[in-house]
Length: 297
Image (cartoon, rainbow, N blue to C red; front, side):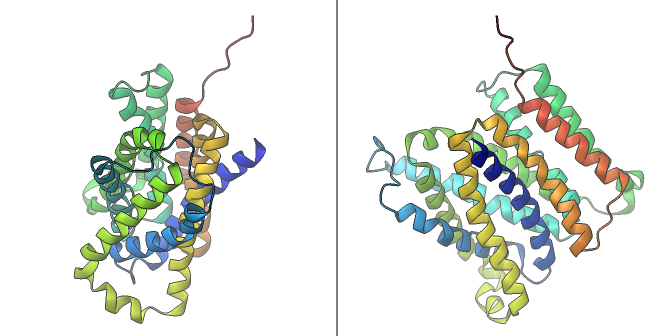
């Protein structure tokens, strides 16, 4: 399905572009407030598709048991609230390209966690892919590693923690996505995270802050939210029509997009260390997710 692969590629570009856009406004919009606005807008973009007649899957339960509702809400808080809040927190001190490189460990951490839980086979290709990607991240941080005591590492750790949270949620989401309509589960989880963030972000004074945001800032925030909602829909479309392996590989476009846009819009440095890091992570992601073709007999 060529259209599905284009949707997967668009999602990979969207993730990198959203990281750069978040970096542009994170000094004006605090992390929790930005996460709330991002998925509030994203939820509104998904809502027409959720309410559209015929979107419900056949044989899906009409009523969701309370324990499943609570579990999906908790996973939504992780995927759409804690993950993005940690990412935004890290972007206050980490460049967009470097943050995107660290965040690119997301799918590999998902595969690794799934393998450790016995849901995926631990293969040599998976371990080599993880090692290549870790090497890529290390290359991106080589200048800072050379001066280890030069500054704090909380920004990098926050971005890594956001990827780990996303990987954990992705693994534990699977039973609910198989049991209930995917789009409805995603929209419900997103709404739960927005309500949670609206309360949590009160200490940032979001009701007052959003009233004083300038039009250019609102434009960037709207782009982040709308692209996240549309990007998530495209991601689900790609997963529906193509294998997860072929879809996941397009996430390698995330750091490349962030690096190019970061250099263009934020004047961040694009050097050989960064290029090498992108190549290592792309190779690691391909190696871990690519299944060799079985020779015909």
